[in-house]
Image (cartoon, helix red, strand yellow):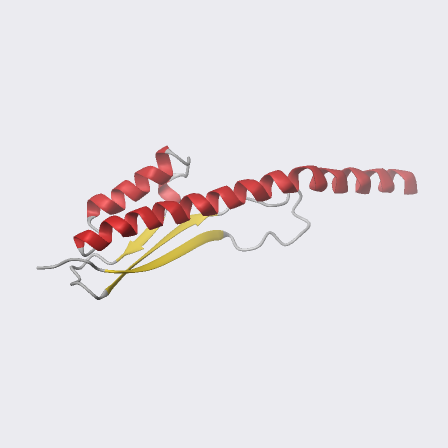
Length: 125
């Protein structure tokens, strides 16, 4: 009995050790994808003075097409009113986060990836 329990514990620990680095790397790539998409959108929005529907849709399309996020799970909140030069415009992207551990024995951390940005508007009347 004790050898069976020992083997199951060994197998479960081995599975965690094998897959956790890969899943952590994938999580970091997802975080970077969200951050890069948000930064690129913010650069375009700074020139326009706000996040236009086209910029928001482009950010959403980038996350869907290039990074394979599910379209129904992407939440983008942004400043959609015209802002003059020197004032801040803000945006936030929130997407679900994948798992870090194959076995749900450990704390998986937050369930979503949230990135926020704040950039000065460069729009001049």
